[in-house]
Picture 1 (tube, rainbow, N blue to C red):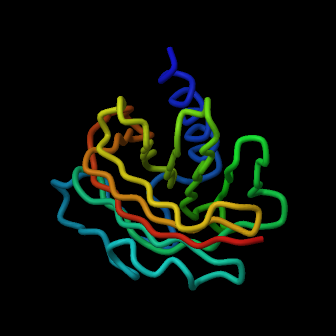
Picture 2 (cartoon, rainbow, N blue to C red; picture 1 turned 60 degrees about the vertical axis):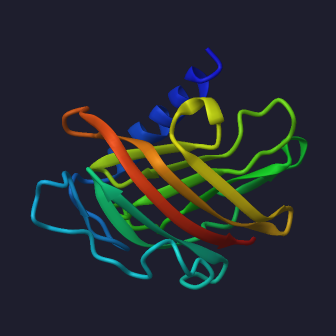
Picture 3 (cartoon, rainbow, N blue to C red; picture 1 turned 180 degrees about the vertical axis):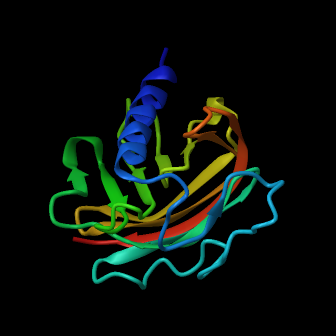
Length: 185
């Protein structure tokens, strides 16, 4: 039951992302529905490097490879959308733009005892990618937090087997994720 709560929350975020985005459209990175398609993901910063540019309040670079592909850089969304949660010792932070066709990445860096660990979600209207630091999840994700306090969040994630789901069909699969971020209010 412990693993179903975060997954259910992530599905809610996915539904919101899908509702606010048109399928197949994106900015800040190119994507393709399946590895079998001939259109590879474009790289803008690639490999999850960078993370500090892009926005006045920082940004996240990301690369998703495998059966679903996407990459790009998204600015940190400050001004109340991203919040430091004192009692849980972490951020619920968003990276994206005001463009309805922009991908959105949400991270949860809460590390207080009793939390389920860090969570990373990507949605672009075509697919949802879910990653968590929970060792029992089988996703092979490692979060490295270099800053996690009220002044901001910075770190990286590497996943060998994150879960993705296609919005149009509900088909699921596994992907690799690499991302680096630096966000501050």
